Structure formats: structure tokens, C-alpha cells
Amino acid sequence: MNGQPRIRVRGAKRADVDSLVTFSLAMAWETERRNLDEARLRRGILAVLSNPHRGSFILAEVMEPNRHCIVGQLMLTFEWSDWRNGVFWWVQSVYVEPAWRRRGIYRSLYQHVLGKAKSDPTVCGIRLYVARGNRIAQTVYRRVGLIKTNYIVYEQDFVLDTVTS
Image (spheres, rainbow, N blue to C red):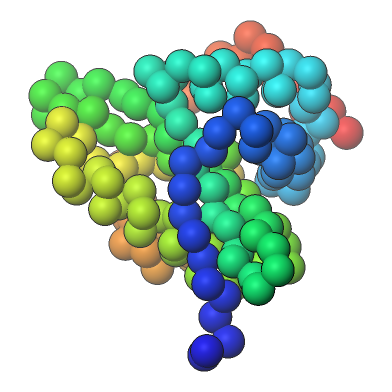
């Protein structure tokens, strides 16, 4: 082997909820210094896992001789574009375990999503948003072929309206 781990990318199942919650809590703290309400987060993740119209989670597992361990995730949600008569897939909730970063985990997740998106004629593109200060993630996203758009995202958040520490 060339030092790169053997990675399997797959859709998340209900049995993966604990890993998804753990990763999402870590991602929110690391990127925005937000302490999420764990019970609300768990319900939100289960809502996606139980209804594919809401989105889906994709996981990266490292395949080691005696175990498989989940080391990364992303969530896909959907946005209809009337201009394109198609659906944008939004990549959200990206997280890779710190010990597994810079080892191709995100690239594997993204290539999996890209392949599925390109094979679906209803998909017109892939989008994601990233915190302005997250330079490392921005570099990674550029390296997989994403480009910065002319859009700025605004929001009015009714639930997570304050940053907690």
C-alpha cells in the first residue's frame, strides 16, 4: 500500500446516528464555536435519515484489517433552480476526524457525491458554504474543483440565533 487508507464511502443508516451526532457537535464547535443542543441535533439528523426528501448523509469509513471506523461525513440537501430547471445539491455538515485529515477522506466523499450528481440528469450542480475564516476548508474545496461564487449568503436564524460558548 502507498500509505493511503482504504476508504469506503456509503450512505448513512439509522444505526450511524451516534457517529453523526458526535461529528456534527465537533464540527459546530470547531468551525463556529457553537454548542448545539444535542437532543435537537439528534432529532434533526434522524429526520434526515427517515426522509430522503430532506437530504442524506454520506460517510467515509476507513477499512482496517480488523475493524471499520467512520472517519468523515457530509450531508446533502437540495435546492430547486428555476433558472436551470434542475436541482443543486448542497454539501453541508462536513466533518473529518482530525487524525484522518489530509489523507484523502474529504476528497473521497466529494468524488462519490460528484459521481452520483453527474449521473443524475436532474442535478444541475453542487454548492456549499464555508465560514469566511475557515481557510483550510476553502483550500480543500478549491482543490476538488469548487469555485467561489458571486453570491453572499444571508440568513435569519430562528433557532441558533446566538453563538454560545
